[in-house]
Image (tube, rainbow, N blue to C red):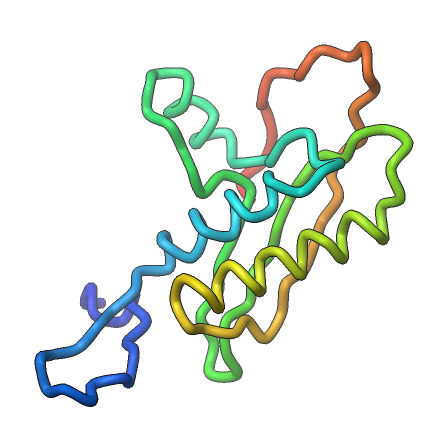
Length: 136
């Protein structure tokens, strides 16, 4: 399998200078930052391997986001923990809107699906739990 199949090719080549390709990891980073900016989201959930890598000093900016490039378009799955007391449907809608807008502004791409998976609720006095979980 070649590396080319893992890149999203942009079709805007009006000036003939070449092509632009965007890796799915870039979309993951944009979506993760956009989701974590929303009030009510306490943390993003990554995989166990990502948690180990982060403890070793390398920051995983795409944590908690899975991007799938399909023929229908871009599908984004977001795994997050919400703050106790917030309206989950309202916060989830804000996350979806923020991710769609960020992707549109930064890449000119429109996601066909932005799915929000609430994997936990954090209480005010609760410490952030260590990340030991299954592969996302």
